[in-house]
Image (cartoon, rainbow, N blue to C red; front, top):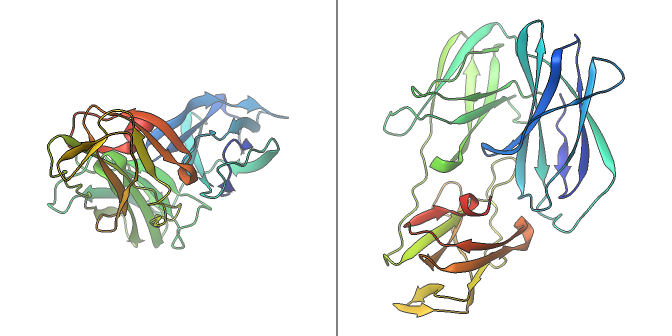
Length: 304
C-alpha cells in the first residue's frame, strides 16, 4: 500500500488496485472523511487483466483540508477483502486546479498477524462508545500500510483484527461525538485492547436566542490548525448575533478560536433561525447556512 500524499482540490487521481488472485465480480472503491461518505462504494474498471483495476477520481472543488480515507473491496477466494489508502487536502491549495492524472498503485492485502485482537472503546465514565472509527497504523503513524479500519459496536468492541507483535498507532474518530485522537496500542498477545476516549464538550451560549456554530479543523496527523480566526468569517442580512444584548444585522465578524477544547475549535454565536453566510478561504468554505434552533451545532453538519 502507498499513501497518496498531499492533494489539491479538483485534482484528478487514478486509483489503481493490484490483485494477486482474480476476484469474483467487480472490485469497488469508496472515499470517506471523518466517517462521512464522500464517494459511495463504486465499481472499478478492469485494466489490462483481471488482476488490474482502476478508478479515476477527482477530489471535490469544495473539499476541506485534512485526511480522506480510501477503501477498496474485492471478493477473492470467496472472502471479501479490503485495502486502504489515504490522501490529504492541503490548506494552501484552495485555488489550484489541475487536469493532470496521477496514478497510485494499491496492493490488496489482509492483515494476517499472529495475534487476534479486539479493540474496545469507552468514554471517561467507562461507558462503551458505539460508532467509533479506528484505523490501525504502524508506530510512526504513517500510512504504509494501514493494517485495518474498524468500527465499534454497541458494546464498544470492534471486529477481530489479526496483528503481529508490535507497537501500533490507532487513529480514533467520531465526528458527532467530537472525538479525534491517536492512541498507542502495544500488541504482545491475543485479546482485547482497551482504549479510553473523552468526547469534547461545547459550552452553550449564555443567551438562549443564540446557537453556537463550531468547527474542528485538524491536519492529517491530528494536529490543531490555529491560524484561521481572521479568515473564518460570518455575515448575514437578518438578525445575525447579539452584542451586549442587542441584535446585530448586516455585520461581518470572525469566529473565536478556542484552545480549551480537544481538538481546538472555532465558534460563533448566531441567532437561531438567521440566514448567514460563512466564508473561510483556506478551508474552501463559502456557504449560506440557516442557523438551527439548537444551542450548539457542528458546522460540518450544516455545510456537508
